[in-house]
Image (cartoon, rainbow, N blue to C red; front, side, top):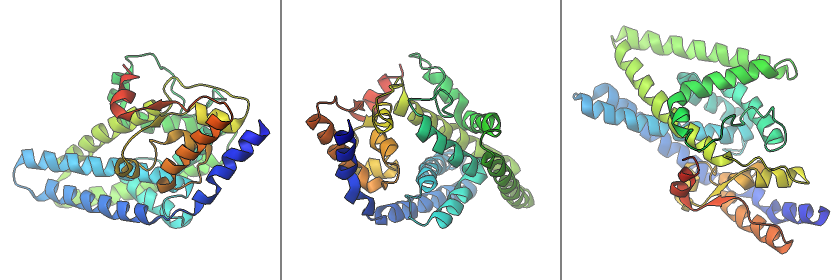
Length: 297
């Protein structure tokens, strides 16, 4: 097994230097869409148009929250401090505890497929349960993250500091936002926009997370192989992979979390070639999200 592990590391070693330029352009696009959606929601005269703008706002926020996942790994801009604060400013308006999630996500990468304490492990993976994920939405993700942090804080004291930092940041950001919307008499409109974003973004993020690990608890003889075979690859076009922060190539992301998004499609191809040469089965894979979604049914 040792030659296999060495070959896997060697296969992706040069990909760590992949440019982050695509991520910079993606952030510019998404923040532009966020601004357009927000401006449309606040200033368009007709409510159908305002709701459509809120949907655009929700989609942009969903993709920005996915980008914040890359920031947690330091692969978004390769400027750890800057991207973490940028990710917090994306997350705190939606009550998302970014720094707490970052610490729990590190444990997820260590425990995926091997330790039942994994904070992102799906507790119920029976077919047909996906409507419950949609119903839980963003509020469910937030509550689960806080609950897992409280359960694990005794063993991982850094979670206490992360919870306090997120709590303080969320309170300050919400006070600033609420002061502004109340001053302009837009409290109900703000609540509606927040609800639309929470429902849509939360449902999409819940389903995405389920697809990546659904029924894939597969311990192997080496931690690297456990990560590869306990995560799922979804074949998508290059542009969609970029928008989704490389998460469709989830097996290779779990095995090599320091690789930037743009490198993951090539890394997947190389890893699968190495596995074949050593007589190992292919990685768990779906041809597109249509096929992936059927797994949840």
